[in-house]
Image (cartoon, rainbow, N blue to C red; front, side):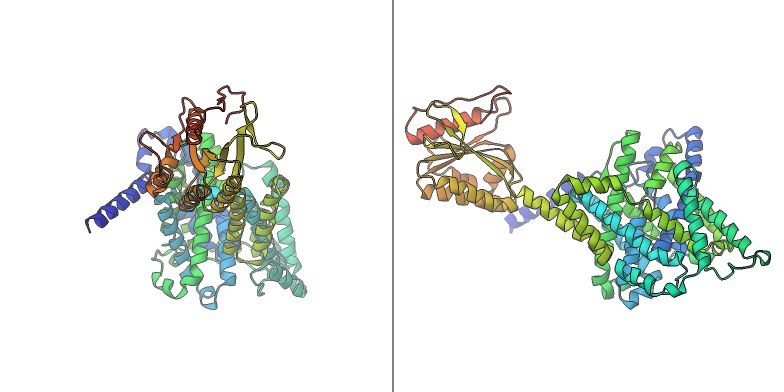
Amino acid sequence: MGALAHRIRLGWKSIRTFISQGMVDPLPVRHALKGYSPTKAGRDLKAALDVALVGLPQGMAFAAMAGLDSIYGIMAATVGTFIAPLFTRCSLTVSGPSNATAFMLASFFLASSAGIQANPGVFVPLIVFLAGITCVIGAFVKATEMLQFVSRSVLVGYITGAATLIIASQLRYVLGINDVNAGSSFFTMAGAILNNLHLVQWQPIVLGVLSFALFIPLKKHFKFLPTFAIILLVMSLLNALLCMPWSGAFFTDVRMLKDFTMSDLTCRPPDITEIGGHFAELFPVVIGIAFLSTLEQTVMSKTISAKTGEPVNLNQDTFAVGMANIGSAFTTSLPCSASLTRSMLNFKSGAATRFSGIYCGLMCLGITFVLASFPLISKIPHSVLAALVLANAVSLYDPKLLRICFRSTPGDAAVLLITFVAALLLPLHVAIFVGVVISVSIFLRKAAKPELVEYTFDDKGTLMEVNENASRLPQISIVHVEGDLFFGAADLFRKQVARIAEDPSLAVIVLRMRNARNLDATSVCALEELIKFTREKGRHLIISGAGREVYRILKKSGVLQVLQENCAEGESNIFLFEPKNPNISTRYALQRAQKLLGTKQADISIYTTETAKQP
């Protein structure tokens, strides 16, 4: 019992050490109060106003993208924007709703059961809350580091597929085909449009085309202006004029957005009791949204930090996006993550500190109270907002990135295409993980092929690489092991060395493991089998150039003891790498090999110059 308790204490200590290395600050905003001046406050207020004018209309567009009422996007642009700066490390990123998470939510509801589809007011806050909890846990266990395994090809394929789905989902609103069941995949949406062309109305098309036409020049030549807000205002006024009797009143039947009232702004906790009955459906989308939120937050943090010079702490930023989602879940809100548009606008508008995001959230809250008190949202035509969503989706296509991913390697092209097709056929929270699995599988296939280069002596006693035309004169062979020796590479490593050991002319194999990395239990077992196999063949195996980590793993696993069997006092079959003399371990290994053979006839040449080929 004492030994077990000791192991439990050691395990708990290791867990605490691992978590503490994540360096998550519970409230970093307190450090920004020191030295905060009126000058900085003025810069933050100006930037906050610029971002608020963009953030609220964008939030409405993202809510429409998710198939939800405008209030969901408005509250995400308010609450999430306010909370995230309290906890983030990168002070100028602006959080709120995003197109990726919004459409993932839409894709989930389209493919979910009738009970979930009928109650978005219950399940949206629950999903946002659970995604936030997942992000917070991920920050403490440093799960952010796993994002390095998500290739750019997966993201490009996912974003391109999501943009295509957004276009298919919103096009019918521009055409005036409103109350039609369009399904959850690209092909069902396209089919719904084709099958209902008789319902097309020209009025929504006119408003949508004009909105799209305004978006292009404003976005291209007037990037500093709040494009979404301007177009919504202009097109709403135009629609109001076209509804007048003197203009023919042709636009009176155009579908408008739905207003919200003060009662919709009530804060209430997510209904956690619904988890049990719908866990299987909720779990994938919660993980998907947490994954996307974290990914967008870390990418944006790296981008802004590169411009401001701030240190990057991705675990802290993951913690911030988690807290933003937890707070937003108590309101009627979409999932939150860092926004490229709003973050870059915040930076370019001259924001000085994280208080710009806090001020932006407060401004959005004030505007929200105004919108809840006056029927202004219902003055906006649905087709105008749909056209803006379409325009935003078109801007997600990046020909440059598509060309790079297609032309770099066949694996990148395959990952992009598979992720894109999966996004068109499957719910997005499934499609992105299909892409990740394919990407990681290709990476593992590449990493699971360690490079083994065999060296021997020629008839002049010079060390040379063995090839098909070279004969092995002496009985000593040096094998360089290059690459990762994790579970995926262990079997290939064992087979390759065993094949070399089959040569009847060999007596000693020296494994030079200077560049062998990431040993695990599988590769250690394979190494133990090799040691025993060579001994059964009457041969010896020596390790040279091993790093301290390799030595530690071999010692703790007990394989070092197997390797050192039959060694007399002062003898060894393993020689560690010495940074001051990189080749000395190989020299010692060769001397040990000659001693095992009982001969000193072969010359030993150790090359130490940078231009010489080193063993």
